[in-house]
Image (cartoon, rainbow, N blue to C red; front, side):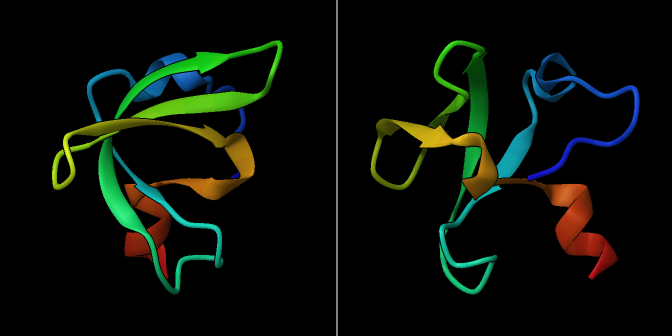
Length: 69
């Protein structure tokens, strides 16, 4: 996902994101937990499975993106 201009992953703290490796055609909604600069991964909690996932940043979408589509 590309962040908006002047936006950082810190702006997503406590917000819901969508995790998908198929450009949004399948995936899950989760809670943003953190971002690791070194590995470019986003930590997302999936409430349906009660699991925390470390996902490549390209596979995490802000909910605002889905609403704009």
